Length: 501
Length: 135
Image (cartoon, rainbow over all chains, first blue to last red):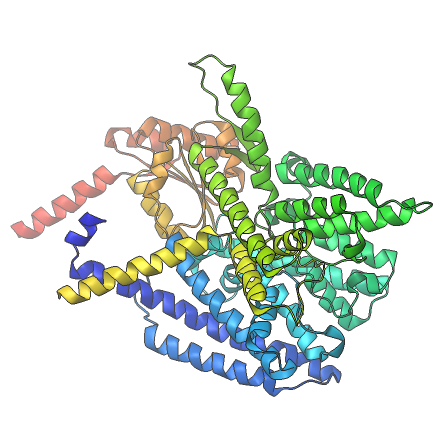
């Protein structure tokens, strides 16, 4: 750092300036994109649904204006700077904060929520959590559709949405910064397009499947959007339990699993390369975890003469927790404590990397467990032995270095640490141990299951704790930290250089 | 276009960066992990750690699907071998090779492998400059 500062020339100032020109023109694109997005729920009006047009039109126009101003000010045709992972982090944070704010405006105008609640709903949508503070039975259909669109887009993520549509090849840093560590094809743009294709393809399948299972068209769209993005917003008050229909539950389970599957695996699935899928570690973790926990919970919740119904309930609840979706078919408040505890653990584990799910991610859990095994094995090896440990990731072997392991450990530590801080805030507010654990695990893992703490009347600081939890959980901590540090450093360098010249 | 570049030194990495920026699908192969540090943020393709002369590594790079294979390792003989593997075994149509030693050009042309020699190009440039000055 010292070297950099003492050699602080006009040039490095220019580099920072040029970089921020690129960053702000990116943000301009994000604004315009959001402007279009805000218009999409209005399509529902063509199908004779009632709703307040201005609740969407106003923020949309605002977003277009901000976007155009940013583009006019900062867009440079010649030499845009390529964004590194750190710069990508800055873009990701700024754009996520922006969209969460602007997307909350319809909730303010249409549902007359206060600012905290509106923001909560919007963040819950974008982070694909699914905790809600609005009463769905009293909301207009346009608002319900808007919530589903938020989850659909939040599940794909900005990098994928934008890379597959507007921006050029300058977004590799952006893609990684949004927690997408895997790339399907050897070019970022084609890769993003492929992810978007798989995602939309599954969504369409989901809509059709729901239709066949007996849902109305409107509900099919909403639930397909929210199940595949592992979001969990619903249009009825009892979630999937409202229908009491086995086919609908099965469709939901399949969609949730597809959503929480690494896109790289989905790609292999579509290409019918089943042998390679079998190698992949995440599948094994999913399978193992679901089988163990389903049998445990079935055993715990079993009532006389009701084996099949308790099996059905536990399968659904386990899948919804592990995939971090948050649909439910039964009320969890009546569950025995061990069952709740298992669900909390599943919510903390979460889905696959490079999927729409949240949580610590199965990949990291697998690595942690595997590294214990490796460590024990290494103690019994000759001192001069050389071992290279690998796991199957995507299509190929991936060799695990110390650097990689350190990142995994750091992530898990940060995750658990944040979890405990959040739980502490809940406990201080006066919630029971069980409720605090469950509700914050649900927010941090972007799950959306609730034991009843989250609601319109919940204290403001609880909602804000959950907002931070959801935000950090979705963007995977380090990016948020990178981004804030980077912003701070760049600002400092910029100011100190400006004073010199 | 799908391009496989073998050897991620100064030249291979520059090619990879430029081509990736243009929007092509790139896979780079090198046996030194540190070589991939040459890749800039513009590069958004894959990199594979491994010996480019090994068939398994080339298969991992999906060389059979490549439109173009560029052999840019620092050893001419290795480049020749990779080019032959790509052409004969995997049937890649366009294979380009970097060649330092101009004496070997004839061997390459008997194998019908297109080669580009930085040495020759540099010499040509030098001569051009000298002649310009002279005239």
